[in-house]
Image 1 (cartoon, rainbow, N blue to C red):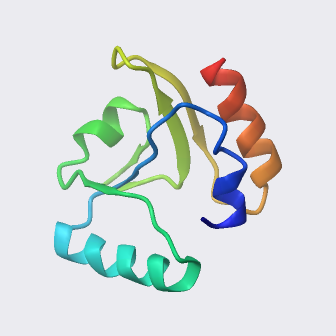
Image 2 (spheres, helix red, strand yellow):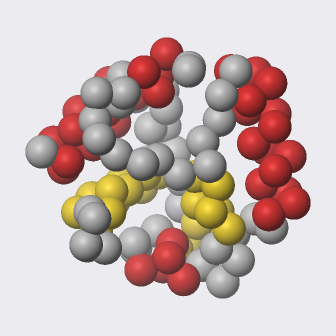
Length: 101
């Protein structure tokens, strides 16, 4: 697992990448990430941006870059629009851990 993903390994959460891309496009990205890092996350295709919109992450006809947390009851407990969440991984992980706990 990529070292940044290891930072979240102690949480009891399921992680996904959500995008409006088609399953075929997502498979290409999944395979590229898997080849580069030895692992990837499952993808969820949201072509109509329904889930993305419900999370407040819709930006016209695309999604904002960022991350979010949905609890086991389907409640949105965190959304963060941030183009640099990966570069700021320590802050990202801290925000996610706080929202899960």
